[in-house]
Image (cartoon, rainbow, N blue to C red; front, side, top):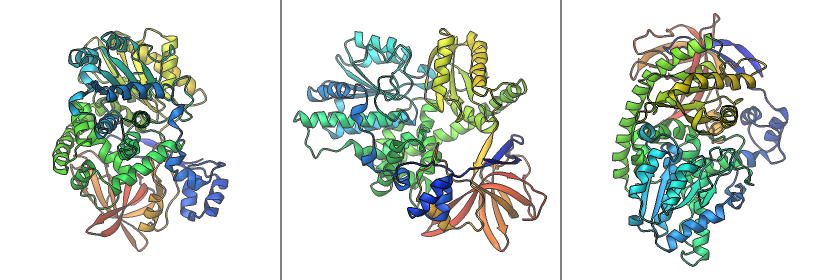
Length: 603
């Protein structure tokens, strides 16, 4: 990769030195892509994202559902399906217990909708979602204390997106006479999966033969429910024409994108998201029709709509309080009901953004000090006003700004002697592996911890925060032994004359996400017009290059009361993406500015 001079990303929070890095291209991939019929523009994009493979590139970019790894390779899946099928067949109570984020909410919705569609009476179904601030992550003691009085005797408890590290709490549920089926994708402790569970389905178990370790929790739940359907049919309890788990791929696509699961190294994730988007656009549920109304969306949903429009609103409720409303939204059968709920989720998201801004300002100051001290892994205390519902987003902002793996810590409101943290990382640092290393070296430091490659969560005693700060920095520093991490943005060169045709060619390569990022370009433009929009932090611009004029938008360009960072007549070098806006059937090209510097040369 070749590196361009560092640039200033002007966002009202001070200038950030971020290197624009030109993606290196695999010439073999580019040649193969051209031979398979991709355009030269598409071939150059693929060459910057893929490496040579024995499979055809078309099969990698657009895998079929038949390319999915067989669920039979997941550990305990037959046992899990048997226990759930027993509960269905014998009309026993079933409780769905999931995490509070979008992965957990979509997992919850998939399990509920599958069971209801297979004839399980709603009176036998109960649902529980951990409260982020009061109960923390996973199957915590606080969550179990809420569960035990409410569960009917002999309940089949199905967890999703949690449970792999919760042996003590699961033991309490089993001792109370319940059947516990864990479905999850987070890391498993060195001592193994919880022994008290009747089944633990998790692709990252050491004894797992499932090839793909990067699938989301909702994907694991979907595969388990597919196995349950097979068992019910084999027992004669369900018709072969019964609704398939694959009918819920749209929900699984949302959870997969929202959880930042890789879309580069996983054919499973690409297939799930690609086909889920087809369902979302072709046979939309009430919830997706409601999103169209809220967003005034007239063209097809794409992966960026999930990442930047749907996921934040579905996540918002769980960041502020009880996340069950998000499940009610996803499972609504009536568009008006779904839209009414979505309006409330949208308001929750506005509240979340305000809290996030305040916490991010604190995190930025703490990060500046930590970097000045020479920290490589940043572990930041957000203070007693820190909000656990947004510290994961704050950590993401710090990673974007400083390019360093980051933990943001906030107090646990129900247990002031503890703090909880969210972790976001870089490509180079695998969160789950670092947490395992910390647990091995400091067995009494982490009260609870879990995660996957790019993200995770933990809980520690407040008095142990200084030890966590040192341990996190030390282990991250070892990974970066040959240098210090720096923020960077990968770019795909420039487009001489951007057009809607370029947008269409990019969209044909969907889905984009972690490991297969949406294309970002970089070029010189003249500013013809600029004005603040929205809350004053965003800009609407008219840019030109020669005789061609382009509309552009720059989100988060400045502070609400700051002066405009660019002026009419100025030449700027901008990193940008291209998109189309459809209004009343007309498609109009728009550039979205990612960052800007002001070169001293003519456009």
